[in-house]
Length: 262
Ligand code: DGL
Image (tube, rainbow, N blue to C red):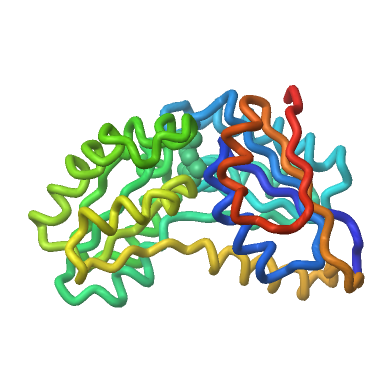
């Protein structure tokens, strides 16, 4: 048993989609979330830059006593999680595009993947695609411009919708029946995506699987918080607290949302 907090970081507000899954499954755990929005998007940065930003976020979470860290960002996971695991003692949970379940369930044999350049060009993504989607046609698309639009609260704008229409077109032309969301910002686009996609196309997002994996690791390492009262919730952003707050309006519990220069 361990009453210390779980640390979670992302390049910005997107990882709140993962935080919500974790908090739903583990309501008694204290959590600290870092939104590194000042440095978003990570997706266009080099591997070295992504590692260095991930180290900065990790060190801050460790300085606040975190017992486990969730890298709630596909780009940071696919580029930096091995470095983090090699250099820090706490367990790290990551997220990468859920190609495996999409490939297993695809009837047409074509799966679309929308993710950042950093994720799609990573060796971890290449390995996962080779291992689990060798027989499948993967239509990969970089979601250039989407993270900045989401970070500025423009989810329902015409610009966002138009970008999505353009990005999805080649996937539909190739007859995809599953679309993998390979960035933790993108679950917030699901309502817009559902307007554009034909009903038979299934959207795959693995936030809930990350929460289950977090629970499994807490159990395995005996790190569960023994308390029965609701967990303390702290959110920090190094940019705009208003934007971060707008992504947490559906969270009823008492939470602290603050600016922090990190
Ligand atoms: N949420 C990050 C991810 O899952 C966004 C990446 C970015 O900042 O470009 O990849």
